[in-house]
Image 1: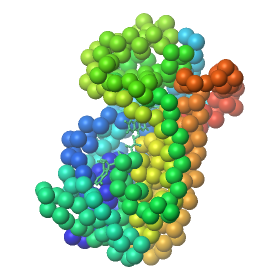
Image 2 (image 1 turned 45 degrees about the vertical axis):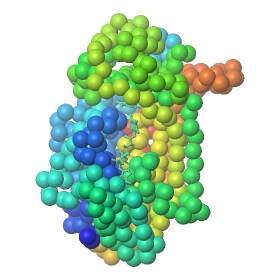
Image 3 (image 1 turned 90 degrees about the horizontal axis):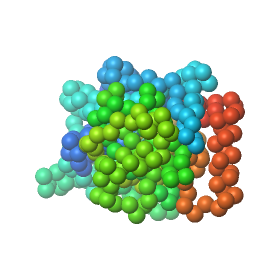
Image 4 (image 1 turned 135 degrees about the vertical axis):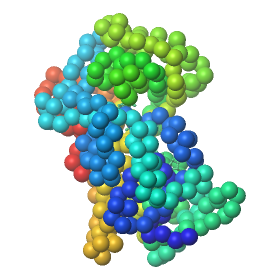
Length: 389
Ligand code: FAS
Ligand code: PHB
C-alpha cells in the first residue's frame, strides 16, 4: 500500500489532519489500533477554543458543533464558599464553546467515511521505518496479517502511549515532565448541570470541577489520591464528596443521578522536543500532555494540526518546505504557553498534600490577586479562551 501521508491514530488529531489534507487533495490513510466504538467510548475534553472551532469549520464538521455546542462567555471560581465570575467576554471579547470531544470525534469519523477516505481500525502500528529518508513506511497487523504502508510523510497522532515518540532515537528527543501528586475522578451523568457556567472549585478537601456536555448531561470531577481505586467510589460517595466541596448555593442546586461513566485520570505536564524527525512528525498528545485544569489538551492538538496541515499543503502545493521546516518551532512556542497556563491553574486551585505553610500562603495570595485584579483576571481569561495560532 502507498499514500502521500500516513497518519497513525484516529483520535481528534489524526482525524482532523486527515480531513484538512483530503480537502486539499492530499491522499492520506489513517491506521488506528482500536475500534471506532472504543475510540468514541473515551470520555475526555469538553471546552473548545475559537481556534479549534474555526479548524472544525474548515474541515467541514462545524455544523452540529455550532448547533448543539453551548457558548460560554465566562466561568466561575468557587473559593471559601463564594462564587467569583470571570467574564471572558468583558475581558477579552471572546467566548468558548462547550461541546464534548466524543461528539467532535464522531463528527470527524462520519465526515471521513462520507468522503470514502481509508481508515484501518483494529490495526496497531508496530514499526515506523525509513523516516530519515524519502520513503518512510509504517508496519501494522490487520486480522493477523502483517501489512505495510509506504508514504511521503508519517504523522504520529498516536497519543501519549503511541509508537511515534518511541520510534525516535533516544539522543534525538528531549522530554520534559512534571507528574502531579493527585488525579481527577470524573463522572458523566444524565442530570442537568448545577450552573449555566463551569465552576472551578478550590477547597482544602481538594479541587472539584462542575462541567457539562449539554443542558441534560453533566460532567463532574473531584481531585483524588493517585492510590484511589475507581471501584471504591460508589455514586453516592462521589456525590457526597462533590457536595462537601461546593459552595452552599451550588450544593443545594446540585442534581445527582446514576453515573454513565466513571474514571480516574492521572495529571501530568509533558513536552517532547523537537516534534519533527525527518519525514516523521509528532502531533497532539503524542508530543505533549497538560493537566486538564486549563482545558487545553484537545485545543493544543488542534493548533499542532493547523501548523502541520499548512506545512504539508505548502509542500504539495507551492513545492516549498519552509512551513514544514518551521513546524516544530511554531508548535512548541504555543505549546509551552499552554503548558504554563495549565500548570499555573493546577498549582493555584489544587490541594497539594506535601505543601508547606509558605506554599499554601503563596497559593492563596495568587488566587486572591487573580480574582481582585482586572489585569490578572484578563490574563487568565485570554489564556482560557485560547492564545492566537
Ligand atoms: P488521542 O490519545 O486522543 O488519540 C490517539 C489515538 O492513537 C488513539 O485512538 C489510540 O488508540 C491511537 N494509537 C495509539 N498508538 C497506536 C498505534 N501504535 N497504532 C495505531 N493507533 C495507535 N483535554 C482537554 O482539553 N480537557 C479535558 O478535560 C481532558 N480530559 C482528558 C482525560 C483523559 C483520561 C485523557 C487521557 C485526556 C484528556 N484530555 C483532555 C486530553 C485529550 O482530550 C487529548 O488532548 C486528546 O485526546 C488529544 O487527541 P490526540 O492527539 O488525537 O490523542
Ligand atoms: C470537561 O468538561 O471535561 C472539562 C472542562 C474544563 C476543564 C477540564 C475538563 O478544564
